Image 1 (cartoon, rainbow, N blue to C red):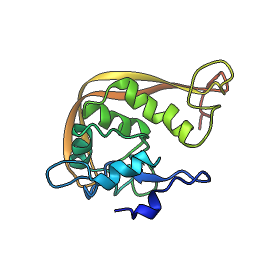
Image 2 (image 1 turned 180 degrees about the vertical axis):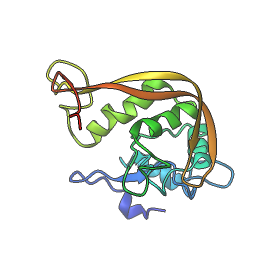
Image 3 (image 1 turned 90 degrees about the vertical axis):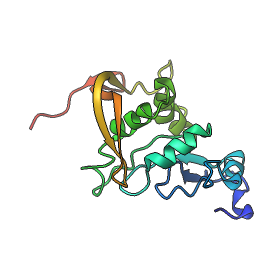
Image 4 (image 1 turned 135 degrees about the horizontal axis):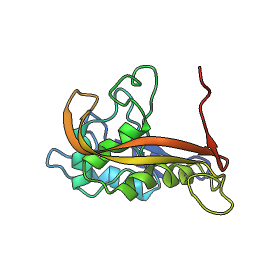
Length: 178
C-alpha cells in the first residue's frame, strides 16, 4: 500500500488509484477496506475504475461497494488490448456498475461531473449555462446482459446503457459516413 509520506496532499497534482483492482489489494480478507485506502481518500486520492484489460474485478468491486466505498470516477481505460473486451467502451463499464447495484445518477456523475472536477475542468461534465454544451444521449435498456471482468468472471445484469446520439458544442453531431 501507499507509504504515509505519499498520502500528503499535493496541490500541483491529483493522486489517482484503481478502485476495483482485480487483485483485490484494497480490501482485507474479511471484506473491510484497508485503513491506508480510507486514509488515502481522506487525503484526496481519487479512486478511478480504470477498467482496461487488467484492472477491474467483480469480486473486488463488490467488496468495495458492500463496504460503502464507491468509485469517485468510472473510466473504461479502453486501449488496443481491451476494446474487444472485457472493457469494450465507457458505456459497458458504466453498465457493469449498474449491474452491481449502483444508482444510475451515481454512475452518470462518476462518469461526467466527477472526472471533470478531478481534472479541474469546470467547463465540462455538466449541462448548464456557461458549460461547453457537449452531451451524450443515452438509453437505459432493460433485458438480460452478460458482463465479464478481466479475470473472466461473469455477472448478469438487467440494464445496459446504449448511446442514441451525441451533442457537441450544442449541436447534434453525426459521424462521417464511410
